[in-house]
Picture (tube, rainbow, N blue to C red):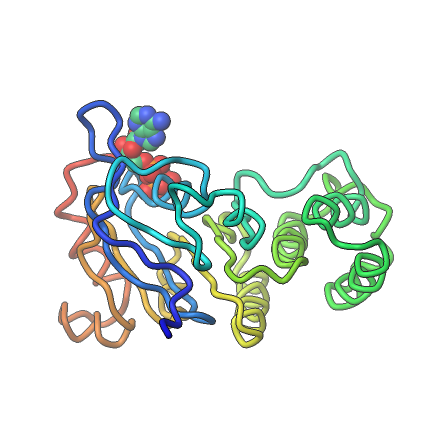
Length: 247
Ligand SMILES: Nc1ncnc2c1ncn2[C@@H]1O[C@H](COP(=O)(O)OP(=O)(O)OP(=O)(O)O)[C@@H](O)[C@H]1O
């Protein structure tokens, strides 16, 4: 049996004549931490939107958590978690209200939510802040809480779109500790980042340039392949070829 959480084959998304995602193919294993890198405008968010069942591909094939991205988008949404730097929690709801809202959306029972939210709040050391508005929390705490909420329903896969943007290095490390713990429990982590130290923490990394996956492998393999001292150098060697500028 195939142990892949995500399978995509020649997946493309075109806007008019513009190929935002251009024939990408790869598989992501269950419990893997997969870094999805690329410069601004490379096509990462467009690809993630297709994987999450939010945008129909123009051509190709893909399945996420065993479900087809063309025909089974509702099942996909139930089996994944998602968080991004841009949108994660409601600032004008309390910590507890955010947890209850998201867990409720995924159909979890009151008992489950009550017990698990205690565990989550304890782990995040946010018990005292449970009734505080999320908008009043420092960014690092917000992002750690957003991640906990994204995996509260124990999805098969969690998509993280620049989850640590703007967060200080110590909190980013703590955040990655949480990512490792989730992966150890079998949750597949699909993560985009512009921080190259984080690329080193991934099991495998793909690098997109102008909609295409130009490199894919373990960080160590990519460094050898591109004769680079670190992932930052690998990234720069590839990103320099890009014709797109992003915004
Ligand atoms: N709905 C749309 N209509 C037209 N063009 C789009 C649309 N969505 C995205 N694009 C274009 O597709 C390209 C890829 O965008 P995308 O947001 O996927 O890149 P990205 O790799 O996620 O970049 P960033 O790191 O800045 O988030 C960009 O040139 C963008 O302008």
